[in-house]
Amino acid sequence: MNIILVSIPFSILLVGLAIVAFFWAVNSGQYDDLDSPAYSVLMEEENEEPSNDQKDDSA
Image (tube, rainbow, N blue to C red; front, side, top):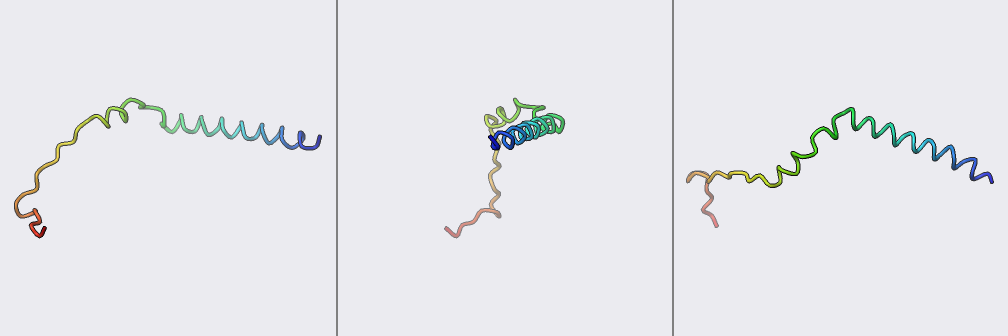
């Protein structure tokens, strides 16, 4: 019976911390742009060829 007196306040505290963490994440902009990271994987970066003086011919 004593475990209930400990676990209920601990559970309420844990839920409260989760709610505070969620609202902190929303207010700090963590969920502002959810689409751009998905598209950035599909974007191809153009790699420039190194000039002749930058190539390493020691292979």
